[in-house]
Image 1 (tube, rainbow, N blue to C red):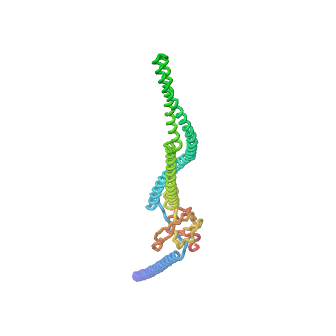
Image 2: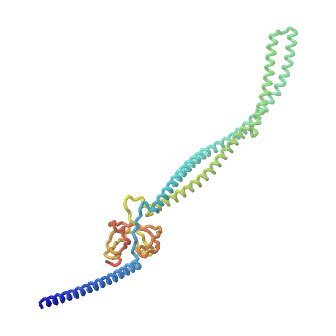
Image 3: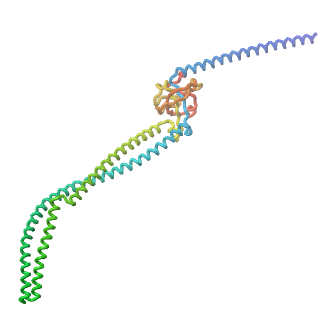
Length: 359
């Protein structure tokens, strides 16, 4: 009887324990289901809130990590090196052209200084020839008159020579005296001949002074050659000036291109010794960007935000990327950030000016 009672009590306890355990398992299952349901609902709500925040908010930005080995950074570096080499070549060419232009101007100035002297020499020689021609013409006329008189003396000399011959034949004079007298007569004839020769030379001088001779033509030829050289130098100087202006314009364009290239984030990423931080800003969010604007980083995208830096610089060149949330194509521009927290550069998004949910 006692054993039966114990068996009955033991079976009742086992049944009661089984019932309690079943109820506990059912309760835990219900609690887990409710927690899971609310977790899913909270997750869906949080995701919907996040999507709503990014759809409405206009202050979010996407950090961008630019490495020196990126293709665009390498392309910018290669183009910059090529442009600088071209700039150096053009600068050398421009300096050479300027040096050549200075030499041509100096040469032209030297030739130009000779032109008045040459003109004065031409005028001076013409005036001298004009005066000398008159004097020589007068002397030539006088010389002709002297020659006419000398012809009469020569005729007398011929008669005297005949008398000397008769005196010698009559033994009135010796042969020596006859020879001396003949020598004197020959001197008179030679003087007459010299006078005729001098008259011819004088006549030739008159011709040279009174007409345009070869000497004045040589001077005129030199003047024409001088003017031709000056004209050629004027043309060369004008061409050199145009070439220098063209090269100067190319140098200015290349300098401008280099300045623009050195202001791009890709060049800064390559040339900077320190790690620089950049972020992409969609055009829809550009009203929230200015230099010095505070930058916030948030946990779970939009919760528990803290300031991690400021906007340092704004770049104007257009960039294209994908929306970090919706994965759609976007157009915008890059900005440089001054971050105190390096880890914030690895966040998917950051916010400008204020926290997205004021949390």
